[in-house]
Amino acid sequence: MTTHNNLLDEFLLCDEAWDMSPVSSSSYSHSQHDYALRNRDNIIHPITQHDIKHSFDTCVQKEVKYMTGLGYINLLESNGFVAECRLKAIHWFVHRQRRFNFCIGTVFSAVNNVDRFIDMNKCHGWSYWMMELLSLAALSIAVKFGETCPPTLHEIQEGLEYCFEVKLVQKMEMKILKSLGWEVNAITPFSYVELIEWELKQHFKPINRFRLDEILTASSLDFKLLDYRPCVIAVSAFKCILEDEICLSHITSFIPTDQKKKIQPCYNKMQEILVGYLKSDLNRNPSSPDTVLTKELQVPISMEQMDLSFMDGPATKEKLKRKRVQGQHDDHCVIMNKKHVN
Image (tube, rainbow, N blue to C red; front, side, top):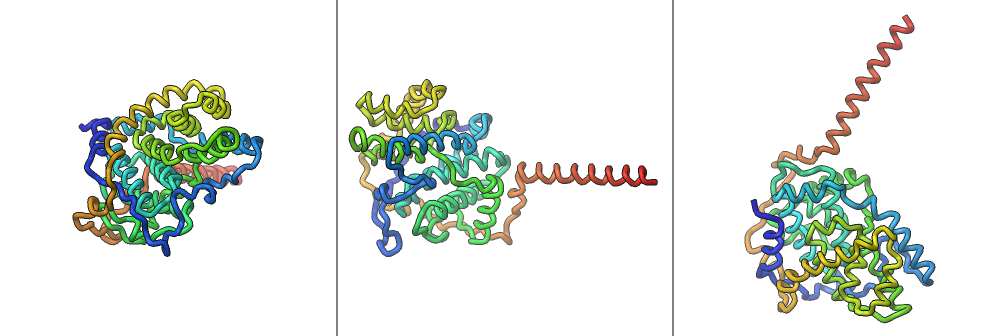
């Protein structure tokens, strides 16, 4: 079985060219660099240092519930197919982000949707088209919650091997939302970026935001970074671009004490990931990725032609099992009460 590291190298070193060409201003007028005017993750831009610290602490308190379980990394290490599909999905998310000028936060939200869904439902025995449907629905949810001018589903799913009808995508969206308990406004590493950037601008100097986003995007490719909390990943990304130790020490002070010791290992792992990422993308002349990803005709998938029982994953089956057990318990109680009355 192909290892995840080999898969990572394969995708990072492929001959794909990233799309940086602008889309129609009438449809997608907002710029991916217009960060100051865009409010992500329901975080109201703070004014004072106290506001920044309060917002940061709120994110830290909430981030754990949006993380995957302890066994998720083991699941991906033991299931090469799912790990490969996850990697392909993230590459596709990035293609879509650059094609439609989505915010980087939308990519992180989509990745979080995919990771938490797989963690809960395992996806054992899934086919590739099922994983593509999951990826499409996960991105569609993230776009709906995070973008002001979202493209149509038909436009979004360019570049996939399969073309899914709207009803099927909507059904998968509902499956994801129910599995995640409708908790999709996740705290991700990107949630901390504007808070930290705002703080640094007030007391130090502006940062290289394009470089930071590139580092965060690269970090999302390797699932082993899921060992670290989002706040640690965010600060580690800043550590990659900050040369001033005073700046770094300042933002590190926002991290919980028990997490500070994890910044250096996370940073080291991030540096390893960046080596491959920079080799693949840094000095490329970008063109449309659709010329690479849509050479072959997409295979249409409709609800009528496919067995959709795969959507009844472990989470759903466990709920049905508990419901049956509860029903049997209630019947037993009714019988006992009748005996008691007699």
